[in-house]
Amino acid sequence: MSAGAMKRDIVGDIGAQAALAFLAIIAIAILVRAIGLGSSLWYDEIATLLGFVRLPFGELVSNFSTLNNHPLYSLTAKLSVAVFGESAASLRLPAALFGVAAIAAFLPVARRALGLWPALLTILLLAVSYHQVWFSQNARGYTMLLFWTTLSTILFLEGARRNDARIWAAYGAVFAAAMYTHLSAGFYFAAHGVIYAAFLLNRFIRKQGASAPLAGAYPFFGMAFGVALTLLVYAPMLGDMGSTFAGVKEAAPNAPLAKWSDPVFVLQNLFNQFLALGSFMAIALPAAIVFALYGVYAIWKKDRILAAIYLLQIPITVAALEIADMRLWPRYFFVEISFLYLAVVAGVEAAAVAIGPLVEKRVRIAGVRDKLMILAAIAMVGGSVPLLLRNYAAPKQDLAGAVAMVDREAASNDLTTVYGVAAEPVIGYFAPEWSELTPAMIREMNGDRRIWSLVAFREQVAAADPDAWALFNEKFSLHAQLPGTLGGGAVFIYVSKPS
Image (cartoon, rainbow, N blue to C red; front, side, top):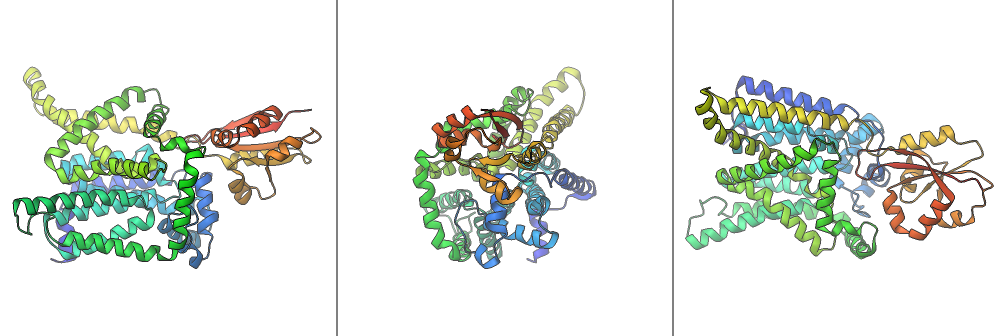
């Protein structure tokens, strides 16, 4: 089979109207990700720029000094910066492009589960999704990871349908690309491995031939090829990786962020973040959960392999991170976002199919199911737009705005400082003339000079040294608070109290 025939077999023909709808959705996705792409960088993005993107190529591909390095993203961001010059927009451009590509790539997955037009509705919702746009404007590797995992699932599903060595060779390459983007991809591929093992076991129990789905050797070699390529690209970093992971594990029990190892806390935090997006989320969130659960059941009945891929990844991720005593950052589950929207649409469609005939009998109107789906689509897209607009209301973390405010209001003899974890990015990127405020400096303050101090991640700063934070609050008063769309991303400006 030619490459073109393989592509047609996977994607399928969609017709002129659907093709125009698809192109319109992609255009919308590009537009909403371009708006605000150059807003103020936040802590992790600056750490990526300073710690990795600015490094020479040889140092970049051999540096795994912190978990903040998403190697393949750092490389593509370095290329973008080299072509377009260093700016927030150029640093984020790969995230935006891969965010759009992930939406396009999900169409054949969604179509397999629901059919063409519900699949188009799914990717439209992804195009205007607050969280998908947020991560598409975040100079980190998460949308890139979303793209690779989606592509790997397409190949896995196609490989489950027919034996073709080229499919599994491509799968291995995508496997390595995902792992080189972020090692959490391993949790996703573990779900693939569990499914393959289940089919292989079933083959031997039922004495099926190798022609049974996923029962042959090709999937094994595809996964092994992916592991080999992953080891190859990470080889220059292996010296750093052991010490980096050991350092994270050693710090975890006593670190200010240790509570992020608690699944209950993480779940509560996720709900609180959703509810903080607006009062209507108190209704929309429970409704979305109900429809998503109904949709998962509907997808499971139609395509158990597809459902299992996304469902297994969640407990595998939680279990692995709990065993390793590492933090359960919600972003590790970002690869589930496309399936989540698919499940909601599937649930709405299943509800419309169930309710439609009942309504038709009572009101004697034909096509009620389709009308219900149209109304639901309008409601879902319409409800997404206000959330999307919130994405543009403030930067993720307005460090640039805080520095500018202090520079405007501080007198020439005032001391401008940063206290806590934000010192490195603020001084290293925005304000090299500023100083880091230390606990020793706070203790020695005598009121002879006014001091301004910028604080980010205030809760983390307070937990790191409670005594120093208490002393800080004795000697400083809050001057201003700049909001951010990042959870806990507000930036606080303090000024010393007169003696």
